[in-house]
Every structure is written in structure tokens, then in C-alpha cells.
Image (tube, rainbow, N blue to C red; front, side):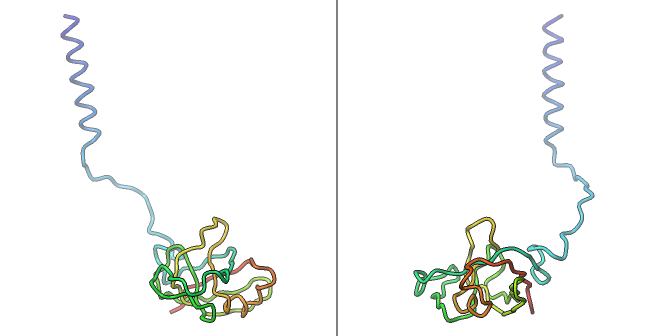
Length: 139
């Protein structure tokens, strides 16, 4: 009798596990991604820290396949599509430039964008090296 109950109990446990793994449609209250997200790059903006490329990167291939030129107004971003134009504002002095994403990075967690030397110069950040910026995708 005890063996029968053990088998029934195992059968019930197995059945519950099987039901738990079913592919039933599940509903959630999850909202669509906010407009200000990388999921919707047309309206993406972010505030954080910017740095700029070291001279040792000149002439090297970027993630997009372009050769890095420190005299171009370009930038690296972790996930925005290559070719995306960004308005970058130095929040210390309100200087603003437009750059084009052509590389991946920065690979330092506290930074949101790496800029070419020319872009950094136009934002007057060469002396500091790292400044707080706002980046906005523009059309």
C-alpha cells in the first residue's frame, strides 16, 4: 500500500512539473519601452561622462570598419547604430557639437560616449579629459 502511495505521489509531482513547463500564453502588465531608451533610438538621450580617444588609436580600424581619424567629428557608443548622429553638450560650459557614431565603446562603466580628439577640442574638454555631457540622437 505504501509503495502505491509513493508511486502516486511521484506521478503527481512529475505531472505538476510538466504542467509548469507548458508553453501557455502568459500575460503581463509590462509597458512598452520608454521613449528615452536605446530600444527607441530615435528619441534617445542620456546624461553621463564623456572621454576622448588617445592618440594611439589614430589610423586603427573602428568597429564600423572605418579608419579612425582624430580630425573627424565621430564617437563611440555601446549600442546605438553606426551612422547615428548625436548632439553632444558639455554640461560644464554648454558647448554643443554634432558627432556621428562609428565605433563601439566606451568600455569604462561610468562613461557613455568616447569622442574623437576634434570633438573633444570643440567641447573644450581636452584639459579635463573627462566631462559630464548630455547626448541626444538627432535626425
